[in-house]
Amino acid sequence: MKQLNFILQAKGGVGKSLLSYLLAVAEQNSEKSLFVDLDSSTGTSTRQLKFLGDLRTEAVSLLNEKQVLVRDSLISYLESLAETPFDRIYFDFGAPESEQLPALIERDIPFKDFVDELGCKANFHIVIGGGGMYKSSVDYLHKLLRALQNEFEVTVWQSITTFNNFAQLGEELERNCKALGLRFRKFADFDPGSNLGSHILDGIRKGYSIGEYQTGAKLRLKKELNDHFKDELNNQ
Image (cartoon, rainbow, N blue to C red):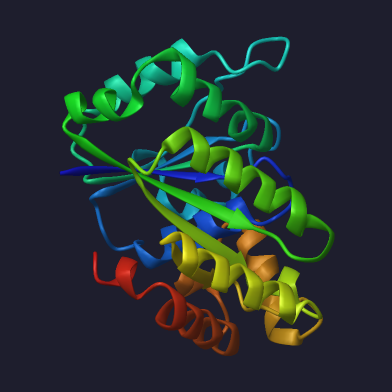
C-alpha cells in the first residue's frame, strides 16, 4: 500500500527540512520513494535534496497570493500521485502550510475516507523543537491530534540539537508521547559547534549525497542513520 508521509510543524526553524534530508539519505538507493517540497516560503528541501535527481523530487506551491493554503490544490495533487510508481511519498510542509492543514482535515472532506479511497495509508510526522520553540511546537501537535481523531499513525520527532541544555523537556516529551500512544523518535544529533557537525550541516545545505562527504563526516552521518533511521534503511 502506498504511504503518504506528511512532515509537519507550524513553528518555523525546528528542522522539518533537515528531517526530510535525513530520510532521503536513508532511502537514497531506493527507487520507490518520492520527496515533495511543499514549503513555498523557503524551498529548502528542493536545494537540499538535489542529490536525488529530478525524477525523485518535486516542488509544489499550495499557497495563493494571500499565503492561504488552496486546499483543493492539495487534494488534487494527492489524487495525481495515487497512480505514480512510488511506494513512499514524503511531503515537507512549510510552517504556513502546516498551520492550515488541520482545517482541511476537520472541515473540508473526511480525510481518512479520502486516503482510503486512494488506496493509500497516511502517516503524520510532527517535528518538535526544544527551548523557546517547545511550547508552540507542542501546541501544534495537540491541534493536529484533535483534527486526526486517532484515525492515523502519528510519529513525534525530537530535534535533538534544539534540546541541548533542555534535557527535562526531552524527557517530558517522550513521557507524554508514551502516555498518548504516539510513536517517539529522535533525529539530528549534530553539534553545530563541532568540526564534524559543521561539515555535515554544510553538506546538507549544499545537497550532498552521503558519498560526497569527507571520511569523518561520512562515518558520522552513517552513525546518525544507523541510530535513528533503521526503518528507512531497511527500505533499500
